[in-house]
Image (cartoon, rainbow, N blue to C red; front, side):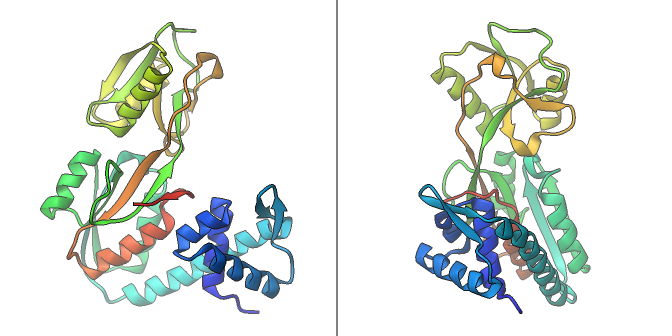
Length: 288
């Protein structure tokens, strides 16, 4: 039995998003088309892959097992195509990304691209969203991954990721503080704005205990037990933990990221952008 990669791609989109409507958004199809695709796939597999739960559907045990196979098949398809298409391509691609992606998500994608495009030079810049947007505007960068502040004409895809309060794994040096001590990037910063807005809405007193131009500066303050900060799960690493419920920090809104591609850039940059658009976003995407 040979599985249609298009069916597998839709199935994996459902497995990662948990809803047919969000899977439809991910693959650019209508919900009815996605339902039809999943019925075809179930017929090919010969086992139920979904079971009703409430108003939606979830994966069966067979579906969960098959999702792993589907990802491996798609990975093999992708690497084969990239290798064949990229073997003779050359040029330079300048990528800009925020620090959120420097350790989680981006390294694996760049390694795959570099392996399959050995003659293409990759230039990577990690920086703040405003700085990277300027680099894209001046032509210094070909594509960027930044915090999204508004819809841009060169935006390829946008997606949301949940935010969470982080602290050092050892907790705060000062227990039960009256004012929440914060570690924040210097403005402008979307996470800073979201953190302060959430605390203001909850009328929760706070003070800015540490400021920095870099994420590494914030992490140092967290590990020392000086403060909390607001980031996504991508920033959760050794020595850090989610904030203790005892601190009564308020719930926060998700934050949006955007992948942007400079108009008129090279074909090799567009290939990398397509790979990032497929693999980089967290499960739930947002419309422009």
